[in-house]
Length: 130
Image: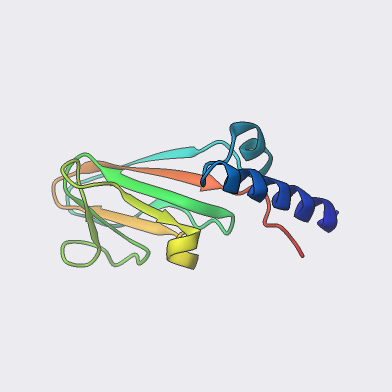
């Protein structure tokens, strides 16, 4: 079983390299679940409300909000204690390759005025085993 998974992964990587970093959708479906969208409404003055649960199979996470909010992998989050998000800022894009285990950690949000935080997760079906 592990050999089959490694063969599929090697084949997918070969196609990925040929396509200059883009995996075709018919191969992508073998490795990833459909993106999961989580909408969390933060009340004004909220602190440390979970916006994305921990998931060891998460390999990508995008976080954004409509108005000023802060996000962090720590439940102690708020002004000057997290990463700022809003519609005027680019979405926070985290990948396993760039951010390591921070991607799979639980993420929390806070807002002083009340807003929504959108989290979009990319979940790997199963980590390849060697």
